[in-house]
Image 1: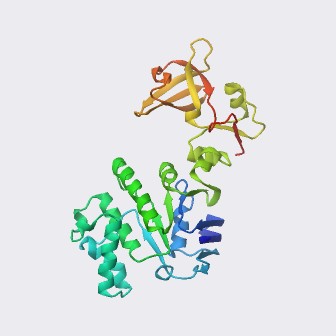
Image 2: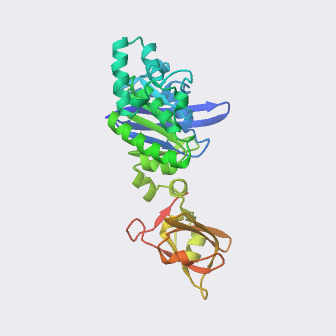
Image 3: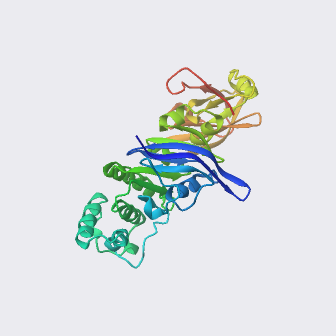
Length: 337
């Protein structure tokens, strides 16, 4: 059953079409991410779903109810913003209670709901703390608790981790996934971070220029992209046109098609005699090492486990490039543009 149905949504700003006849279904209890580059329309779609913007055409349905013309407070949705949107002059409990007070909920009910949601987000011990005394990750959990406590049918996340440093982002990402599973509330998550979307999602929609390029599980969009845009954006795949694919790998793609290889599917091998590539950059990241290899005018990204033999390569080495098995299978991705 679809909890959220987006039907034929089109939105223009002046003469620019931001969303074009867009259709999506989000299932009950699903964690669904919308990912794409800046300007692709993902935030506009989130705002339309929330009721903060209205489409030029199309419909938004939540649990089979057309909410397209309804204001945000009548849609039974909650929004978690990237800037937390907390009241700095209030305590943790006061921030969480705010939405319930607006709904004129009985005080005894409010207290019970706050106690329950603080248990879920593991912040019971911070009940009376000022939110300004909390860490970024704790503030994000308060922001989520304030949404959960109103028992929405749908939670919308607007790049909620973008303000956190790397270590805290990973920690909060893991916590967010646990909280969403525990609460069981259908969630739509907007982000430009591909790794974040892959780690969190049950399914992902990839947007470009207001058009859905592909929808699928993280595994599907990463290993089985429909086109070169999805391959390049989600997997940072190297794309080889019909000329380069034949010159470098002796693979014929056909006219107008591309060979797509993930960086981890290309292994540079030192070959001072017949190697067609030159190592131009080496970046060590701990577990893995990324090598940039130049062949003619093309720069190719490869990613190797640091424990592999490739770790001995250095800038200036002449190499051959070998294709490793693609997703455990001996097949190549030949994609349309």
